[in-house]
Picture 1 (cartoon, rainbow, N blue to C red):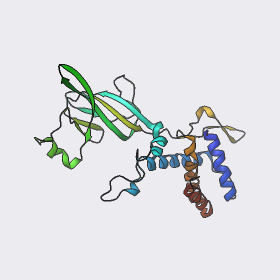
Picture 2: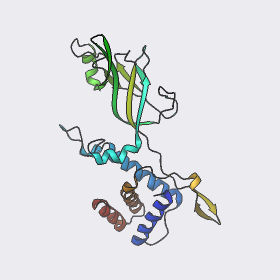
Picture 3: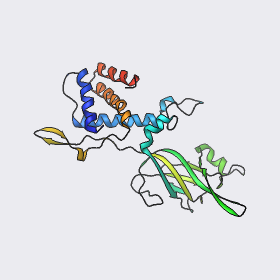
Picture 4: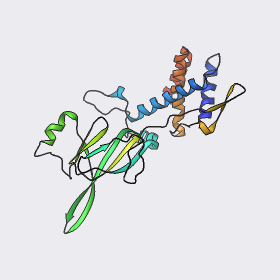
Length: 247
């Protein structure tokens, strides 16, 4: 659906449940943007489902093929040359961080995987194999780096997340393949004013990026927010019912 079709659908459902005017363009944009962000967050890691002893929630990135398919439009695969003197990679911010092809990397949202090439020599022949880079918990960094048994090596590399960068060990790890979910583009219903009325302008609009089959759920989330904002319990209940039914 285009963002204009999304707006018309939400207004159609809301009119069946309430009297009065439709939300203004600015209110609609707030509703649909918050609903879209909520939908993405629920897919890549629903924190409400984290439990002690079970760190992986039922709804999380790659916990099912359906969730992977839903968020595949956000998945980025980028390669980086890690500076040998620091072993640091600045977390992609969508502005300044570039990959090995000098392309600007979209802003980071959620990590998927890290891999690097491990070179071995078998029978005089060099072989390159991808190996995973394992993340360390903050309270384990000291003991791992000082260990003679599990200390990071090129065969078993490690990493740690900090405020605005990722630290790799060993620091001379070389090239790293980083796959991650980027920040989604917020949907916008753009418009021009004609005869004191807002008229849809596709040139300044941004459609919802997610697959078409997911957009009913996003619309129901927006309707729930709308029901709360206008204190319409019936509209909120109706939207929640449709979400529960998978509409």
